[in-house]
Length: 132
Image (tube, rainbow, N blue to C red; front, side, top):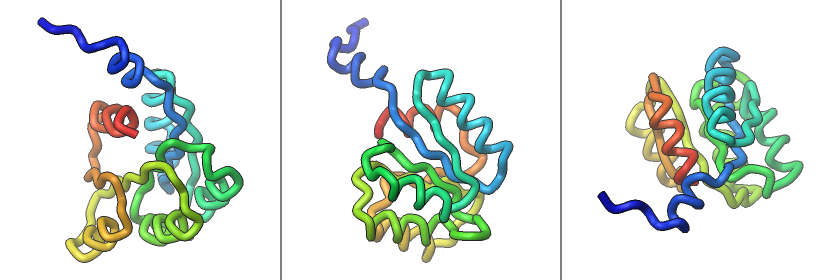
């Protein structure tokens, strides 16, 4: 078995700064706990408006924003549009239980890095953050 190079191992183990956005408190908490246990710094927001304020306060504060699509105040699509307007330089991922084809195409046209469908396995979430 060939071991990965020290550079690859170091990159894979690098702590990431994550903003997880979901209107369901339980899902935010599961994501926060799971990713924090891997050494990542995780902040959470209950909707797109709060997330936008957090990112706008410091564009370099997060390596990745992971957002739900369905939220009441500002949905994921609106959040992604606003993040693009303010030129957020990090990765953006969407997690949703359902997206129709047109909405998924809109996300992709905005340069979203990944779309995951709920229920998301913790290993998928971990890999998503490691790729950020």
